Amino acid sequence: MTHLVLASGSRIRADLLRNAGLAFDIDPADVDERAIEAPLLESGFAPADIAQVLAEAKAQSVSERRPGALVLGADQVLEFEGARLTKPDDMEAARRQLLAMSGKEHALHSAAALARDGETLWRTVATVRLTMRPFGPEFVGRYLAKAGNAALSSVGAYQLESVGVQLFDKIDGDYFTVLGLPLLPLLAELRARGEIEA
Image (cartoon, rainbow, N blue to C red):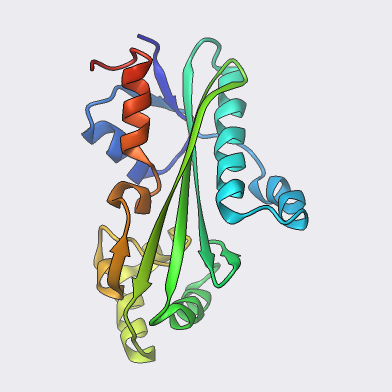
């Protein structure tokens, strides 16, 4: 079995892998995501494709400095009304974003890639569609007060595993994908490669 390296500093992604019984190291990728995204956005790349390119870039970057290691890169992009949203800069930006999304659907595209020695071996992207319930400024204020700075660490200004679940009416898709990692396809690939027991 090859040692797995997670090219992400995300606590949630690490928890998902740990809870699934995987042994791994954490070695966050140091890539300029905005610089990678810029030409893709100009070329009209779809949000799901941008997530995939970023996940691969992270996996490849770390795999180049970890010879022989199997490196997992991941990325998540939020698509709302045809636009790509990034993490809000501050609470006011989070408030505006949540009010704009109230009562509407958005999509989360979560991508993963496995790389070894700078070469991508496998890639996948999964999409979840989420519908926020209608809410007003007072609720958003109370929600952000409860969520605190954690709201700024997510592209949607919410964490579904916490009080953010109260923002939603409907979720179509996989829970793990919402949290930022298409875990079931990843586990299937690791089993197929003999990296974990079948």
